[in-house]
Image 1 (cartoon, rainbow, N blue to C red):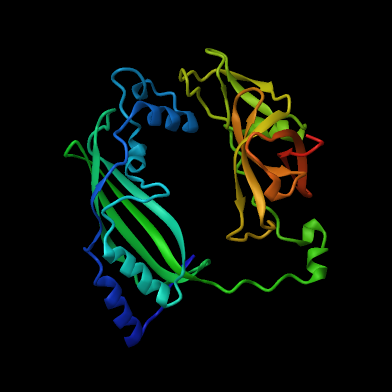
Image 2: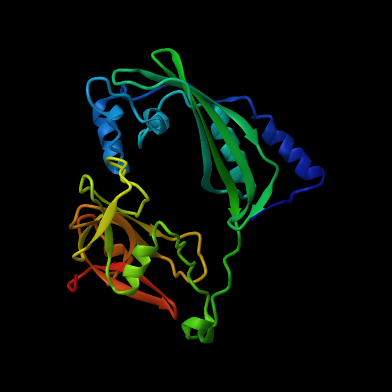
Length: 319
């Protein structure tokens, strides 16, 4: 939900100051810290579960969506960042827009990136929006456009948009009576989307079984459920039941934004099942700040309201 605000002469004057930054460089003469390389491509494909043969072997190319990966500066940053970018952020900070959230990106691919390519790039501040009000707070959307070159040839364009905003006031805590209300009287979790492609999975959950699809042509396991095999493209499949053993592969702790029916902070994890597939789930049984990568967890089924039960994974001594 986004609403326009900030009308009037003062707002118009401030917006004019912000828009004076449009067209000014955010990064000039940037250079990738490493050439395009097979190791990074392999790590990316393993994380994404992408087995496309074009991304391995002597004639490999990088997945197109890696375009930004070669331009990232990491914790130490990269050279070429302009004073204009810092000035713009400082100007927004000065009016209370001290928080930032990434909102979206757009990419255009002009030629494949290949191992050995040297990546260079320039970025400009493309646009600054009028002040907008969102659920997070009130602020301005700032869009940068990065033009990426590979060995001097245009390789792609990356647009990245952030919201620099003043956080909205936190809602008043719920009265004790509301927190103690039965599930049916409180906000309910969003319903999962159930369709013909995943109906069997949710049927299994109702029976306290976690079912994994198995391709009957190549025996590859896949999760989440898909209509076809992402290894051999076969449409024929059956299922195997997960044994329930897993380990935390990665995780985040959600603090913001708050949603009805959720009580932050809480851990959301990518767990790797003993069968080899991974799934996103909640971790129960341990505090959010005790969750660790590699921690063993075990499947359980959590009833969250009168008609919804979800597979989650419990950590701790009971896992």
